[in-house]
Length: 97
Image 1 (tube, helix red, strand yellow):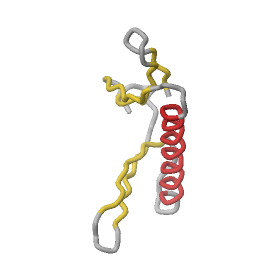
Image 2: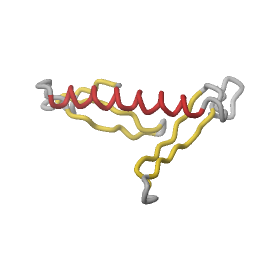
Image 3: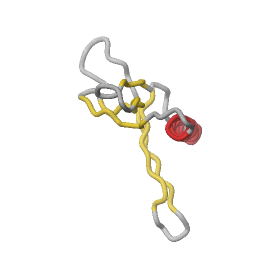
Image 4: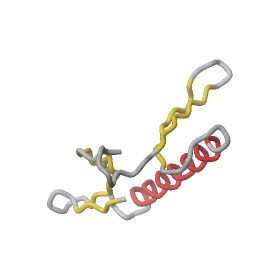
């Protein structure tokens, strides 16, 4: 992903799902170091969606299950990273996901 000799080669793909009326109901993009082809893209998309669902459900349980954690997305030069913050602490102690 960067122009150096130790750079990791990655592939990306995007998926869109439309309902019967032509309205887009889902859109996401994925980056992977796995090969993306017509033969692999459907399984990769299903795995990416499943991983997102697992992570999202985990954050929801931690936020609403009595753990008193707040979900925040940290934006940095390296991209977006979901964090959980403990309220009431100086600036919120982050639990990186």
